[in-house]
Image (cartoon, rainbow, N blue to C red; front, side, top):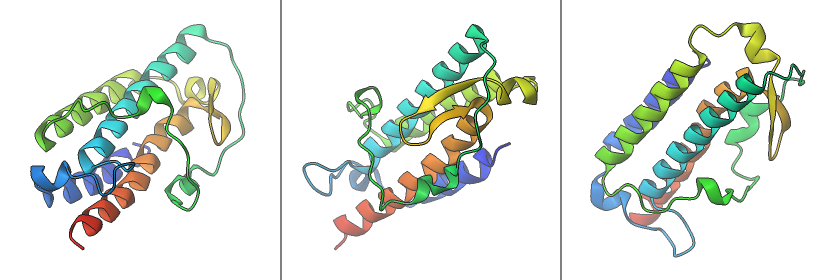
Length: 162
């Protein structure tokens, strides 16, 4: 659904090739380790689920134009992560990170299960870069966001091995 499974599989396939030791190394003082990137993805999906839930509860019907969310993977465009989704060291192992990601994905799927497509297309909340996005695009965005950070994790792994 929304390409989430395929994109998550790519992420988890990469993580399988990383040791806990590699995952905890920061490439530079001001850059995230692989574990921190995974925590950011966990926090981000958690926040999106919360926001979708709020938008569904408040029920204001609004339209938003389709945004080019596939461009999320373009790492030339840097975005400072909001405080709420910056890693705080919650995960100490890759197993903990994978468990966290599994829980947020279950929450996402539970939330959108049995929701009418029309409902998801007629509720919006703003994205810092794309502006107002409808809920269906927000769900799809989760996967594109994961691919963006998959590239980042690959860069981190290459950096610590160079």
